[in-house]
Image (cartoon, rainbow, N blue to C red; front, top):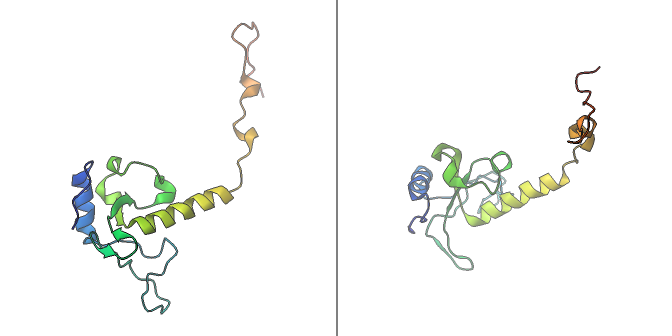
Amino acid sequence: MTRPPIAASAVWQVVMDKAGGRCQCHGACGSKHDPNRRGRQHRCPHFNGQHLSKQGEVKLIAAPRDLANEGAFQVAATLPAERLVAVCPECYDAVRRAVARTAKQAPAQEAELFDASAFYVSPGSTEQADVGAA
């Protein structure tokens, strides 16, 4: 196994021990992780410290369990170990790209929903905002 990261190494170690040193992706990245291609979802075969011929050594990441709601760029050290999973960089990047793609395709919110210009009164004005009027 490789050494833990410098920051938040205690949290990282708890997550890796819980995962058994193996990537916990079950297909959220878009891959079925099935070496025989039989159609059933399997767990990613990458282990921490495993050497791959083209990528080099696999270094697992302690990432938020739900990237869509937790945020792809939230620091994992701020989350408790129960809300983190061990993922390989390949799966993490694929999930992050999928989250960004769905966020980009989401319809834009209406600007009028948060428009508060009707309640704005300039600081030098003597008139009052009509906030409570129906």
